[in-house]
Image 1 (cartoon, rainbow, N blue to C red):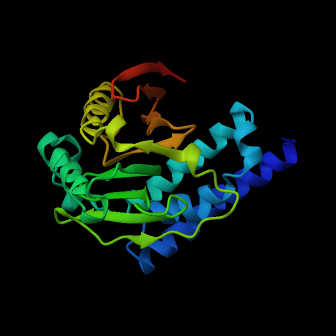
Image 2: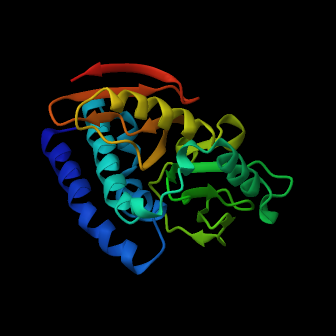
Length: 234
């Protein structure tokens, strides 16, 4: 990809944060706003063959979007959901019991967000038509009705799917516990108020991937099961 294209993608993604913030006030949406309207529409065929630096630009934009979204989940309402394995298990169990997915395998599309106030936002492949994607929100211990997501013909739906059978909501607790423990060792670093996964090439990547202190910055990577992969100072 030419340097100019990289600059354009970066600019569009970063400018999109203001758009996201506005749209959240208008709807309950998080997942489809972040992925469906900003990142997902740039998931074209050429993107699958991009160089690593372009992928990092997109991942950085995802983290910035997540920061914007987390501002709409104030800490005052925290219930320590991110480390409550029983609550996470119950949320996953409730998803598996959705009547429209009875007897069907559930596939997560693109992103899955967990917030410490007990909210989850996710996009799922439609149970009947694999070309369709629906957004769901988990709030007050129950899942919302599906909301259709508008997709482009360029969206790589197959490459952005992962089966719920290959991941687990409790992995969010693993990520949170590891991240928070590392953050305690870094001056000025804050504990997580949200964590999320991004799916590329049918692989799960956990975010955030950085811990920012007042004097230092660290890169942190997790395995798909939420265990620590790497941790080093930038």
